[in-house]
Amino acid sequence: MTDQQIQSGKSTEGMVDYNENSSAQLQLVLLLSPLVRNLVSSMDEPETEFKIVDYGCGPGINSIEMVKPAIETSLEKFGDQPIVVCHSDQVGNDWNTLFELVEGPAGYSHISNNIRTEAAIGSFYDQVASPASVSIGTCIFASHWLSQGIQLYSPETVWFADLEGDARLTVNRIAQNDWTHFLLQRAQELRSGGYLVVGTLGSVPDPSETNGIAASGRGIYHAIQAVAKAMVDDSLISHESLGSFLFSLWFMTDDEAKYALEQNDDLRNAFEICQISVEPAPIKADDIFKEHIDDPDTYAEKYVGYIRAFADSTLRTQLFSPNCNNSELLDQLMVEFYNRLSKLYVSETSKYACEIWHLTVVLRRK
Image (tube, rainbow, N blue to C red; front, top):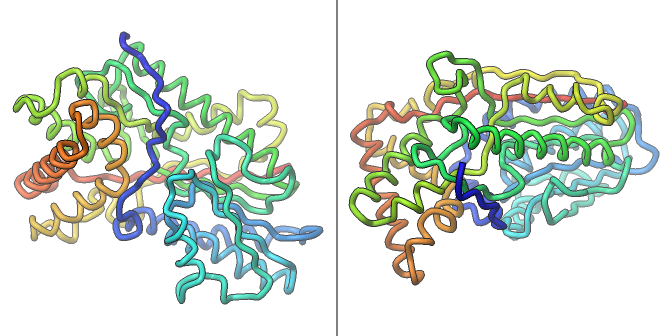
């Protein structure tokens, strides 16, 4: 492996129109809501406040729906016990939109006068809350983002699942270190008897794939690779910039998620494993926008919106910016990329469909 470089930028900052293009994320939130209710129902009353932390909250709509069942069940079980809701994300998150939603008609601030809302600004790979203060923590569609931007020589792919050799080993090591560190921080923050619920994108065995693993969203990343390669061929971006570009992601298998909890003494002593599983999404697992397949224009619009929501900042700063000497040219390249991406989905439709496998991790603090 050559040309390895760790970048300082965070891949999740500056997400675009996320609330309008996160239906797959909301599906998982709604799927996990009954589980969160059951967990809160099983808990003992905290000594002071019932604290809920949503790690990697994003601009808000899914975070609000994730904490609501915990709020409602806490009120049902513990009455007037004060509730603290902490939304945690990076400085580049759209915090104004988040708190407008919290206070709006679909928010939770009106449910009780005993709710206090907080923000924890920074990485969830660092400390977010006071020791032993959190009753339940949730982390939805966020823990698959690595702690650092990754740039290494990977000319045939823009994502982890198709990496081979030293490149794959390097990113795998970073992913495992990040997961271990994330869990160690949560072990410090959860009170005894508290729960951590992680719902994210996972991977499953597939002998036909490069590394014997099929990862969620593989069609999307193959589409991005195809469009970017065509832009290289047309001399719009350099071969070098694409060859060193990689999304800073890792979607774990259930065995990978278990590994840190089984091998790290501190984690093994801190947590009881309630659930670690990877399952297909209960609806539209083979194509998140399959209901639009007979309308290629709408199908393409949905996919471009979804990709733009989570990938725009990464593509802009790490792939296209090195090819530009001014912001106007950068904007033009981004428009060209999305136009080409739309045309690809119109013409190829389900060839680049996004499949979803949900990784669910539920841990109880001993």
